[in-house]
Length: 193
Image (cartoon, one colour):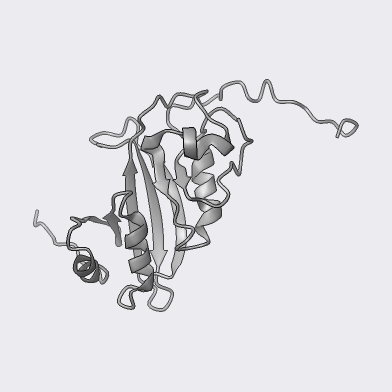
């Protein structure tokens, strides 16, 4: 098998702008992914948006991944950012890996209003809402489902479950049958509403 060098129009401008950073890149199914550290996420994102050679003016997708039990991985979680240059339709994925410093089993949770001060420091990542405002709801969903805390987010609270839910349903250590939330859920009737 012949090793192939990965190329992308954004790579050379990034290398020139950030010579101190050693970027890692991957290419799979015509999609290029650039791995960035959490400390460099916002400066790299601003550069990719503002530099005319890049022009990634649209955040089309933001999602979380739990790699628990996946063979050969080094990190537990990742956040993926799907970027698009709307003039050229060129795409680029950014990926940030995260590792929890605390227990991740269900029931270990903090309330939304305490997440940025009392949450797991290993799962904190800077918000990109200042770069792409459309990230607001997507970051809230990743927070709600995976427990990844976006520091500096203007309104970080759960979007699909309720404050104090007690767990993060898309984590791989969350039981398939749940943790009793359906059995203990308060039923609201027409008369009591």
